[in-house]
Structures are given as structure tokens and as C-alpha cells.
Length: 483
Ligand code: ADP
Ligand code: GLC
Image (spheres, rainbow, N blue to C red):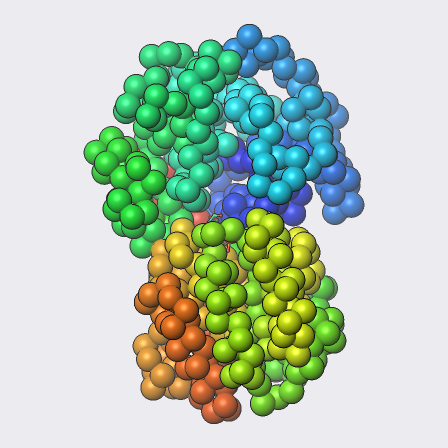
């Protein structure tokens, strides 16, 4: 079977969040299970250097001649073999070689031609199969709204592939004025409430979901939550009635690449049976974060995009109480200016208890997972979440709001059970400052009981978060669609 993934991100070359990790880990795991797997992703500015820095050779340019609506696109495909997966980087300088983030000039702003950029990605993906896989794919697997146009062009062009669309985050629906139909050359027949049309605008995500043979999202709980008005982003009715099939498949992590026994970003290494290295990581983290740390008080890590989704306002609200409880907070994140400013201020005001680093730094994130005792993720909603998975693997106990993938991946049987190694973290049910504080109080009590804490940490580190099981589930799904 030949599978082609279409995504706007793939770690470690182009990343803004968890999508990138998934589009690196899942294809690799599928290829390991014997599937012919390829990925199409844009060659943004800086990606070529990251590819060669990682020791890979960027293949010669294969010209791709196509147009998006009335716009001829000057593009080529640069192929890179990484392990068993073939990557096709879409080189279209006018669209992707620019200053800024992946999606905009900086901050939360978006590029005005994002519809064209990801339409071009989609068009290129429908042409890339023969170059990457020797033929059109059996399954075209598109991710998030940026993958949406690939599904639409595949159907419009009668590509013989089954289409799977994965929702990593329904909050981003890829909405544009309906002029995007003509601009992108998407057939107007698709401008219907069952497909692309969304309140007289265009939603690239909705188009893909309506056309897909199966829709997946990244945890079973989120698959239920998005059928409700609270989390359905005004698509709950459409998801209920108009998509052919909706399944939740929980994300995995790349356990080779994320392994505290070998991670080259860490000052010392450890396993669940030999934890001396973790103590060194903790002390070094304190130095790096410039926080006075002692053994009596737990270190709580936060690594997060700074957006409303992540519940960072809840942390900010209880920061004085956290400091009063003695907890040390090490925060790394970037995103909306209001959150960045608020955490900078908190770190200045509570400089003995809170450290905040604003930026995107994968090495430092790994040292936070390794050096912290707990990892806080109070997300208001969380389709899956990877932070809690990395934290568990690195022996940092997750404290999470029980929603979406956080509910599905963190087991909390109560303090008694946790003390006996029958759970992997602490959950709280309501996204309120009080509930968050209660959860932190439970964490501190567990931390002060070294025997209980050790068995909890062992259980968390023993959780199998590898991709194997989920990659297999996707393949079973593909097989059921195979035409
Ligand atoms: P989301 O995709 O919604 O941001 P996830 O938990 O699925 O949430 O994935 C976030 C990923 O991005 C994790 O791998 C996390 O370590 C990483 N990450 C988030 N913010 C930063 C940052 N500021 N620096 C480094 N890595 C980050
Ligand atoms: C999205 C979600 C996150 C998920 C990630 C990868 O960014 O917010 O919960 O883990 O995609 O699927």
C-alpha cells in the first residue's frame, strides 16, 4: 500500500506545534510496518539548511508545472529520503521563501495569500505521487486545513486515491472569503453546505472533511467532544451528519528520538531504573532557569504555545498561590503577546519561584521535561497533546485538565492508587483556578512522600506512548478504505 501524507509541518524541519511531531512520527512508524510512505511539505525559508544540517541530502529539483486557479506556480519538488520515508519538499519561493513564521509575518498575523500557499501545496501533492511513490497513492492522508485543498483537487481531478483527513485542531478551520474558490480554481460545485461552504465563506478544512472517505482526530475523547456545540466550532452538526466516518486515534511519540537515556540535549541521562541522571538534569535546569531550587519543593515545568487553548491564564491567575506553596515554575513558550508579557511580568515579580523564557527552543524544552518533577497542562481543550507524553517518558508527572487527549492518556485513580503505581498523573475536572490549585496541592503532597512519588514516577515512565499501536490502527483504517 502507498500512502501520501500532506502537511504544512514536519519536525524537525518546519514546526509550530504538535502537528509537526505527528507528521514525522506517524509516517516513520507506518513505514516500519511495511507501508510505502511519503510526505509532502513546503520548503519554507531555512528548511533546506535544517535538512542538510541534519545530514540529509536535498535531492535535485524536479520541476512541477501547475497553476492554482489563474495563477501559474513556479515550483519544484526536492526529494529527501529519511529513514524509510520519502519527503517531497515543495520548493515554490514566491510562496514559501519569506520572513516570519510558517503562517504569517510574525505574532498572530496571517499572510494574506495563505489560501494560495496551501492550495499550491495541495495541487503539488496530487502531482507528487509518481515522483515519491512510483504511482498515485492508494491513500491520500491530509492533515488539518492546510491539507484540505489536496483532498479537493484529488477529487476534482479524479485521483484514484482514498482520502483520509485528520483533524489535529478543529479551532483552525481555514476560513477565507468565497472569492478563494475562483482564486484557487476549486470547482464551484463544491461550494455547498455539505462541502466547502461555511456561512457563505470557504472552509478548507470542511471541504476536506466532507470529501474524505474517513475522518480521524487525534484522540477518542476529542472525537466525542467535537460533536457538541461547546467544542464543535459550529461544525458539530456537519460532523455528525455529513462526514462518512469519524474515528479518534490517539497520537504517539517517537520514542527513539525522545529518550532520556540517549537525548543529546540533556546534561545527564537516565532510565526508570537509574534516576541519578534525572537529579543532575533537575539541578542543571535550576541553573539554566536561574531559579533557586531545593529538594523539598517540586519543580513544575510548562512548555506550550501561548494561546487561549492552553489555559495559561489559569496558571497566571494562581501564580502568587503557587509561589506561596513553594512550587518552582519553569515556563517556556511563545505566541500571543498578552500571554508572553504576562509571564515575563510574573517571572520578574516572583523571581524566586517563577522563570519564564519566551521563544521556541526544542533543546530547552527537552531539559524542562527531564529536569522537572511535574508538568502542567491546564488546556481548556486539547485534541491530543504531546507535552504530557514527553513529560511521562522523561519522568515528569503530568498535571492536566481532564479533556480530550489529556483525559485519554493520563490515568488518575486518586491519591491512594497513584501512591501504589496504579496511575500516571494528576487530573482535574474543571478549568478553574481553584481546581488547578487543588491539583497542585495534591501534587505537592505526593512529592513529599518519596515512596509514593517514586512509584508514581515509575508508572509514568513505563507508559508505552510509542507510535506502534496507533500506526497500526491507521493502517487498519486505510485497509478498510482501499479501493
Ligand atoms: P500543540 O500542537 O497544540 O501546540 P502539543 O502538546 O500536541 O500541542 O504539541 C506541542 C509540541 O510543541 C510539543 O512537542 C512541545 O514540546 C512543543 N513546543 C511547544 N512550545 C514550544 C516551545 N516554546 N519551544 C519548544 N517546543 C515547544
Ligand atoms: C494540535 C493539537 C494537539 C495535538 C497536535 C498533534 O496542535 O492542539 O492537541 O497533539 O495537534 O495532533
